Length: 157
Image: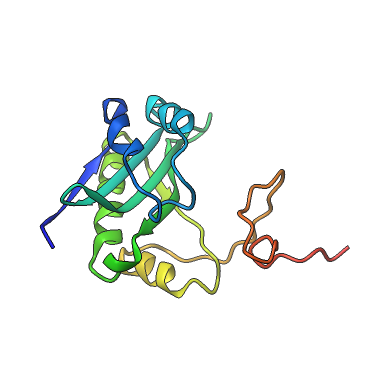
């Protein structure tokens, strides 16, 4: 393994993003979505590389409010399975957090499933404050699992 390098992507880095092979993100990279993501200054993406291979990622969106300073919502964090437990997720999140703070974000937040022990351990390690939260989604906002359930959500009507 070579030294892991972290890169915060810019619009000019579209070819790097398009070259990411399957297995890091939830789905294959969509060129139009990738282009739009990198072109929007409110979207941020940190990639970890082992040589030329992207092995970790963290993406976020700067949220603007009319009555508050901007904040960062962490959209997604991922590490290729073979590279897990090597501090890569910590490194990409730290890079994302630093970039958000440099842009003036005054709050950073993320949500995860209650049974995602790995993610919860990562966020605790990074010093995140944990609160109870209930989430609602519309129009397919939550990814479906292999059984077609929305992350275990059940219709209680």
